[in-house]
Image (cartoon, rainbow, N blue to C red; front, side, top):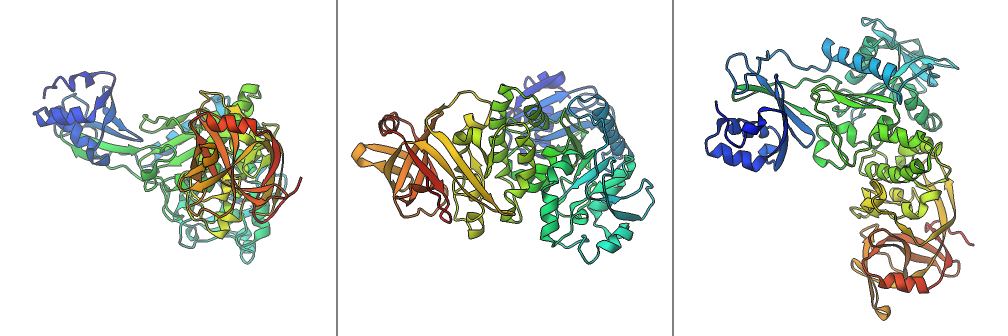
Amino acid sequence: MSSCTMCKYLNYGEQDVSGKALLQSATTGCLVCALFCDALKLINDGAVSRCNTARNKHSLQITVGFRTIIMQGREDVSNPWNFPAMSRLNTNWTGSPDSIQRAAQWLQACITRHRRCGQSLEPLLPDRILDIGLSLSSNIIVLQETIDQRDRYICLSYCWGLSEFISTTRDNISSHKEGIQLQSLPQTFRDAIFVSRALNIRYIWIDSLCIIQNDDRDWSTQAQKMAAIYSNSYLTISAASGRCADSGLFSEPLPVNIGTLYARVFTHLPGPSTKNSISTWPLISRGWAFQERLLAPRVLHFGRDELIWDCNETRECQCGTIFTFNNDIRKSDFHDALHNGTITSQTKLGTLWRRIVVQYCSLALTKPSDKFPAIAGIAEVVQLSRNSAYLGGLWSDTLVLDLLWRAREPREDSQEILGRAPSWSWASVGGPIEYSQELYLDNRRDPIIHCEFLHGEIISTNKTKAGFVQLKCSKIKVECIGRNLENQLLDMYVRFYPDRTQILDGDYYIIRMAQVWNDELLVLRILDAGKQTYQRVGLGEHRGGKAAALLARCGYSYYYIATCRRVYVN
């Protein structure tokens, strides 16, 4: 089988290839290009603009987005590249001895060689832990309450799903301390215990069994310890492809025939905002799991097609083709920003936090009231590295820039969402938010600040927050007309990005906050003119210089931005 001018360059090394050109070549009779097109049909029905290919002595790899096809030889027919035959039985079942050995090798290399990941002392065990023993044949595990006990332990991160399964309550905690039958546990728990024992780890922490369910006091106590629980774990097992607790950990990518080759599709960790990845990686779309995998020093993902290793130093997968998305928050980036302790790292922490918030707000929470608790652990470890107050999801030393979020998909929010945070916090809206790219990616342009943060306070309950911020700034009154803000007397027009679909009645004002590429303006609705108290209703953007010139001439005043429920005075 010969190669045409289109595919002959694929014989060696790594190449970027046009999917359209491959299709055109295949229609003119090139059998190799036709083989490529058949392989691409396994991904997105072949609708591919560009793909990356790599070849070695044993296989050909085609990568599109976060999916990779690996093609190897068949036993019954020759192939264009003379790849050696791969037995159909040579598959990567993620629960096989080979897969567990690979996980053990990653773990050992991480512990002994990685500067960012090494664990010199055994940590304190969580308040409750499951003693699973080390025997693979044992059918009993024990819930143990600890006091100043040190040892290595594994955490399990998983989707609960909608079906009920065993959990610890006030009624059964005594019996769980005596022993829990392995067969009474959902499949994901049993598989995680098998892996833990195979890795020679005696203890595992699973939230539904180690936190007393339907007990607000215990939940509140343990939720405040989430940062320590995951940060101190020896390993976190991620049931990344499971939809519920009974889905199990293990899976196997079965090969399919593609012309003269066997092909297997591997789906890697998706990047942020990859909507069509939710069916393959349900856990990645969950808000609580985001905190768990970012805080844990090392995570072993059990995916649909393979194992993926992710630690503070590196990211690897069984097929060897994993890569990183531009907007992805790598654990190594998070670790370095927290531990470098330089002025540069402090600046990066502000940018990194906004990236964290953008990614976090696109994720799902079963309970809207968990918006703050599900990111509180990340905020706790970030606060240890920056001399700043944490104010309702924003930071005092970067508050002017942190305020410049906007709702990506404005909606009519429920009262539960409206009441969980002050109007100026991104947590006050449901759904994803965004910043100008310069404010959450690596800084390509230093913004010019035109507003001064003076003071702020947060009043917290278990899951909700109320509060205010005080700004020194200038303002102009405007009228809201659709998606625009106008001051016809001043011949000024501003693009309006409302926080919600409902436009509230009242007097609107704009505050010039900062200049990134354009002027970023906070849009406020007056609550109490006498007390100079306002509510945030959106963000404005002005592309010209007129708003800047007018606001600069207005001078500065002091204003409060508060929720409708609580008003503060100077």
